[in-house]
Image (cartoon, rainbow, N blue to C red):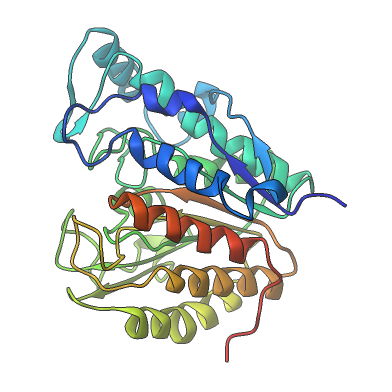
Length: 320
């Protein structure tokens, strides 16, 4: 029986050094991996070792000038990239490429039918990275690159991106806001970093109506989020009928997270996952790739990732 769910991880992700007391630290991915390794799910996961992304795929989203800028900044020993919150080290360029490559390798495995879906446990995160600028701990926008990759390599027509990180995915939105072939959905704390993501941002030009932002006030929790997924995202996404679903899976809307002010329980990530799987099934396939974004409380990140994977590994249940 073929494995249904894959996990991408590498010990090398710890080599992206962000400095003492930085919230986006190596322990994030390491802790989730160890939590999963000790869980009852691990022996049923299909493990994938990432390989670096070819630069031609990264250039689908980021300019060559920006890529060269990142490489030079890392090799020259700089500690900040473009913004005060995006810390780098000598190996950060290589590790960011490895993270993107892991996401693309997972997408290939799904497209080949080797797995039904999977979770890319990678760092640094990506959804804040713009075409020409690093931002919010992010260097390369893995999810945006994966969407372009799937369209370019496999000819897919419609990609759905679900971003449930507590911060708005500005980089992903800006990549696709004029593109009618990508439906970008984000639910996030607002107003909050990075300041984008109002309900009035709905796309531009041919992409008008293909961006759906659901800004929620600080303090929103399971009830509010589940309503958004069930009553707003689900019907619109089913109507869109995506060929592939990409998830920017941040776990920082959890009630214990130190960088945000939302009140999710980890079990809600299972609800979100079920909705994504139902959308995929209604669209005639089960292609889902989820990518780690934010989340800064180590214990609750491990529990949230466990719930997310547990639901990815199970048949989708109709929400009632």
